[in-house]
Image (cartoon, rainbow, N blue to C red; front, top):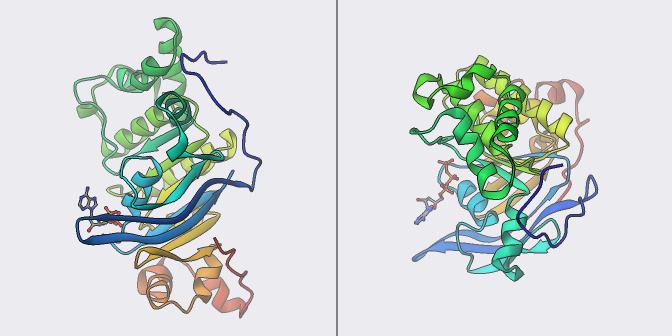
Length: 284
Ligand SMILES: Nc1ncnc2c1ncn2[C@@H]1O[C@H](COP(=O)(O)OP(=O)(O)OP(=O)(O)O)[C@@H](O)[C@H]1O
C-alpha cells in the first residue's frame, strides 16, 4: 500500500460499467469562439473509450476541461462521482492523484533521467524512502516494456517509442484508476503504434484501468477501444461500439468510418460481409 500525504474524500472504486466520468452540457469557448457546445458524455469504469473528431474540433479541449485545466462557461464534470466545481484544493489534489495523463507530446523533463521523471509525481504525493521510490520507478519502467537500465538514461538518449513508454510509466506512477491519453500513437510507425496499443490493452486489463483516449488512429480504435465517441460540431454526435459508428447517418462519422483509411484498417469489412449484424450505439 502506498502512503499518501493527501486527505481523500471518497475513495470508493466506481463499479465496473458505471460512469466514472460524467460530462454534462459542457460549454467551453475562447473569446468569441465556442468550441464545446453543450457536450455530454459518460466514460464507464473499466472501459477504453476512444474519442475521435475532426482536427481542431476540441478533443484536447475536452480532455483539458475534464482535468480542470480549461475553464467551462457552463455545464458539469463529475469524476469518481464528485463534481469537480465543488471540491476544495485538498479534495481536488486527492482526486487528481487517482488519474494519470499522457499528453500528446509525451513531454518528459529533459534535464532529468527517466527514473527522476517517473519519481517526480511520486515525490509530490508519496512519503517514502529513496530506496522504495527507486524500486517503484523500476517496476513502472518494466511494466511499460522497457528495460531497467533505461532508468538512468536521459530522454534525449531514447527513441520516440521509448519516450512514449517512459511518459506512460510516469503517468502510471501513482497507480491511477483513470488514464487520459492524448493521441498516444502519434509519431510512431505502424509497428510501434501496434505495440503501444497492445501495451495499453494489457495494462488496462491487468490494472483494471479506465482509459479515455483521444486518437486519430483507426487501428487503435479498432483493436483496443470498447466504445468510441465522435465529436462533431462541439457535441458528441454518437457513442458506442465501433460497429455502431458504421451505422451512423451523421455525415462526418460516415466519411470517417467508411473512408479509404478505415477500410485499410479493416473497419467495417466484417460488418459489410455480415450484413446488418452490428450492435446499436449506447447513447451517452
Ligand atoms: N487556450 C486556448 N486559447 C484559445 N484557443 C484555444 C485554446 N486551446 C484550444 N484552442 C482552440 O480550440 C480548438 C480546438 O482545439 P483542440 O486542441 O482541442 O483540437 P483537437 O480536436 O484536439 O485537434 P487535433 O486533433 O488537431 O489535436 C482549436 O481551434 C484551438 O486553436
